[in-house]
Length: 45
Image 1 (tube, helix red, strand yellow):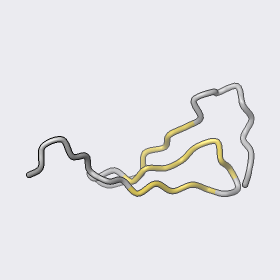
Image 2 (tube, rainbow, N blue to C red; image 1 turned 90 degrees about the vertical axis):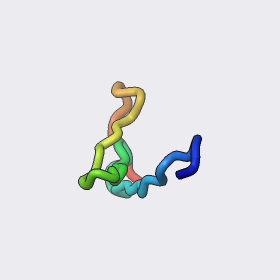
Image 3 (spheres, one colour; image 1 turned 45 degrees about the vertical axis):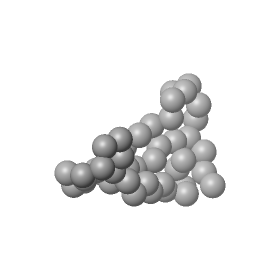
């Protein structure tokens, strides 16, 4: 075990809606991470 290391997460996004990204958690299943500024409208790539 290395001290001070963090697990790597796979991050995905939907190019049709960039209002959130999805991080795959080590326990399984995605975690939705929305915009920090919720006033912004969803936009696409």
